[in-house]
Amino acid sequence: MVMSIRMASPLPLIFLLMIYEVSGADWGVSYSHSQICALKNSSVTIYCTYTYPTGHQIKKNFWTKTLFKDNAEPPDLSEDPGYSQRLQYLGDKQENCTIRLSHVTQKDSQMYYFRFITEKDKWTGKPGVSLTVTDLQVESPERVTEGQNVSLTCKSSCALTDRATYAWYRNSQPLTERRDRNNQLLLQSVRREDAGRYSCAVQEHNLTSPEVQLNVTFEPSSVSVSIISPSGEIVEGDSVTLSCSSDSNPTAEISWFKEGTFVGSGSIYSISKISSDHSGEYKCKSRNNHGEKYSDAVTLNVMCELMIV
Image 1: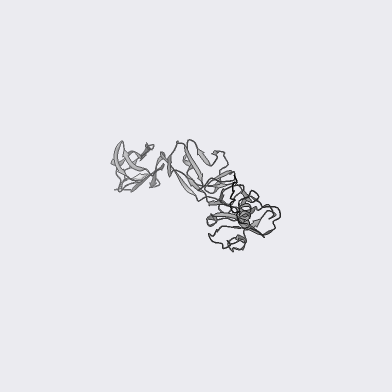
Image 2 (image 1 turned 135 degrees about the horizontal axis):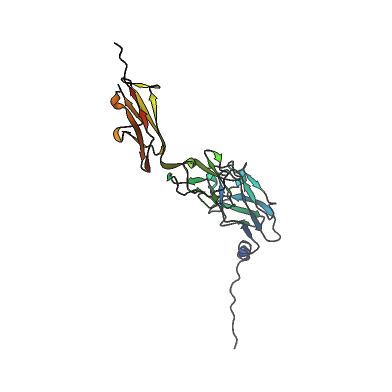
């Protein structure tokens, strides 16, 4: 008995070569990071290596941020006016495709790909490297009450790839005391002196966040009464003006009392054509939503006007 064996038609040689060269292990691009988060105005280094089969000669290699679906060649970043002065190749271009991109802005937040061309084929390192450029923002409560603990956070839109050491400023002056933890500034038992404009920065980077105002509220203190006029002894018929001052946040409401009886409100208390009936002890009370405090008493002694007949 004779058996016949039917052989399948061989694949075209060109197709076999295409499978080997494009999908073979000898072709490849390796990136140190698939995602990079960098600060605005900083320099970004994208570490990259690539391989290709022995016997191939590199005709061209370049970085691009645009991939076309058709056979059109993507643009070379080094020929882009927006990149040409900021893009620097650090590698030897034979196996090392590392680059540095300086003075990055949010417009540079893109996907980046390394591509190389030999006399026989082409290769693009996909999926590429995603670069996100971020600025800094201080996250803080608008107000806090004196004595409470408060935490301020230096935030970015993505987690910074490089290890960051943060610096803090109040009213544009560096905070030298070490009260920070990672990207947070911890204010324990906050004082009224801690109020001000806060900003943050990453050390060794020329980027500072916008300032945010921290408002510390507290009950009235240092309440006192002073006699504005007259400057000397008080005689019947004079006009007398008293002033009440206090330290408080928010601004306190002021009330006036004579011998414990309410007589007026406002930071200024005036008596026109004073008489002996106005003699006595005067106090003011300073009050806000955190508390109230009385001043010490001020005594008014009204002298009778001397009549000469």
